[in-house]
Amino acid sequence: MSVIKINAITVPQDSGDELARRFAGRAGAVDGQPGFEGFELLAPTDGRTVWLVLTRWADEESFEAWRAGRDTHRGSGKPPVAVSAELWSYRVADL
Image (tube, rainbow, N blue to C red):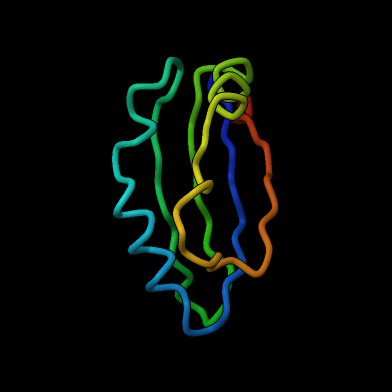
């Protein structure tokens, strides 16, 4: 069963567009990872400053293998956009 990982990223009020640009610059970077099933960047529409990065993985092991081997935000030379980030884990509920 798929697992869902949500990275809740808090950015300053005027930094959301920069966050979106940075993600656009990395579009497809995770697509070839074993177990990766999908990605969405969710922009707030209600004045919040928390953006959600939603990824779907075949299983927890696939996510952890990607996480252990990534170099995502290292060496970009750009200052961070995020004020804070929090990782949430979910599964699709059995109905």
